[in-house]
Length: 425
Image 1: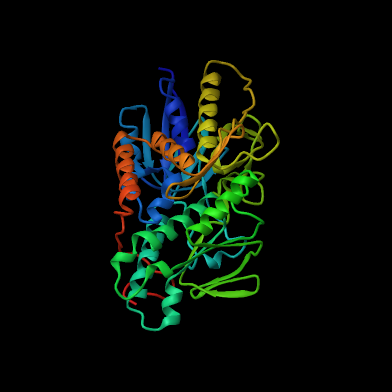
Image 2: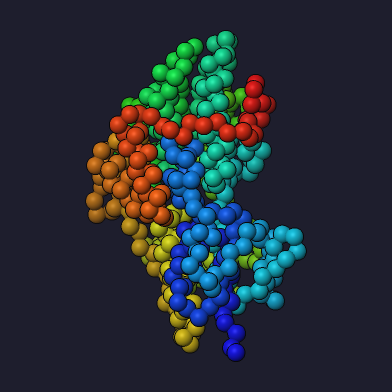
């Protein structure tokens, strides 16, 4: 019997999962490898971090999603390298998986621009674990402030710094401000959480630099209206357990969140292939790795230009488009077609929430802001969530926040605190 084509997909994010979905019905055997057992709807991860949603509302087990695909084997494992000569993916512990075609959809992590020592003090937001870590730090800051008698130390506990004013930074800062100034005040007796300071620091000249200037200006005004202090044009030069330094000024703050940059996975190192400064693989127009036509790479793993020459953004729609393209390319090859047309990215628009009832949307041909944009933003995110239960659960949680200003996911789970602090300190 003729052996079926073996495909290995590394990473069960938007791109990897889309590739697997689109290969349904093809004469292939697929092995999907991920370090975690769940697919994460990352655009809403900041809402887990800010106690708006529970972890189970934005993540689903990978095995559950693929339970009706007998040709797909899911492995919970960490990839340590790739042997391109024998076409094997190397796994932690000494195991390996062979492939005829390999798809790398390994994503990215936050980057500290050469200052990795800042990470313990300023966690980024890429995984479910990051989200629960940040939620713990946010909520513990209020608890520590409640029993702090020294006014200076109390102010430091009630000062939250977000570094980076892209969509994640803006969404984090706006939601933290609303959490502190609207949701929290009735819950505490010794502190007034409305006096919380939320500072958004951006090295560039404006927030949401990827949006049109008028939408960027609207976003900044909206943030300031809900109490966020926006500092532009001043990069952070130091992060410690006591605060940050920016523009030569020190700011005491016990909670720092990092949203200023990303670095790709080690995929380029595994292959010894060319990459950009952020570690993203340089790929051919058909999304294959140069000199390795049997290896595709997609999503945050790669650097590739859109038709207008601008970089394809590291967002979920782009990864899904690339996943669809790769699946069609593989099916075309299996049918004996050697040549593959170049990948062409179609930008469907950019969306960012600023706070409850405030958002900005840039579709290019139309730009929206305010309450209407917020409703469209919410409907779009609910639509793209995987699973009916998750859609209903998120819709109900948002309705509760919208009507009652309450966030039901304010649970402090055990784990690591910020450096220099204990859970009971």
